[in-house]
Image (cartoon, rainbow, N blue to C red; front, side, top):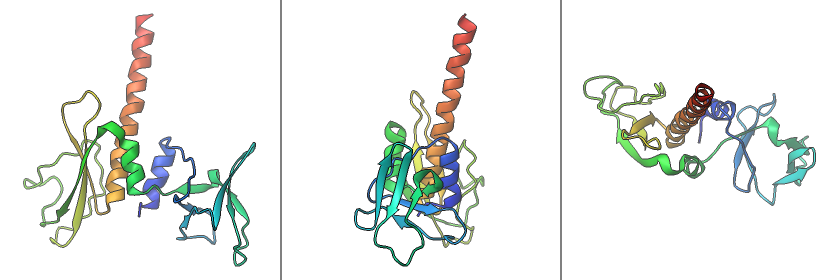
Length: 180
């Protein structure tokens, strides 16, 4: 499951959630620490109102919670959702067994221009590392994003994709201003 800190970074980077059945989310309010909920027509439904989207808890008498605003919830995208969001820049996912090499050592031939620090291998050869490979639109070099959980590797790739998109938008605005 996606790390909550990475989910917050995605939200803060501009990723917007349109709740659908099967989506996982957390409520970041005291009393719900560590609880993860799944949208389902049976227990938690999406209700669209003019004032916003509400997530309604059905038949949950044990909860003192009838509903929560989607904006007050933290979406925890699944692996398939993150892969879909990467769209055409996604090239592949690989699973590696940690052989004890450290990131940046001579035996680590992958590159990660985004500088993602979440590389799980603890160097003892006992961990698994997932690597998502992307190729920016119009680029000729693959970027690699590693983490101990596949969803986290996808999230790092998506953060880099969002960041590159925002920088591209800034360059286009600057180019238009210079042309005037």
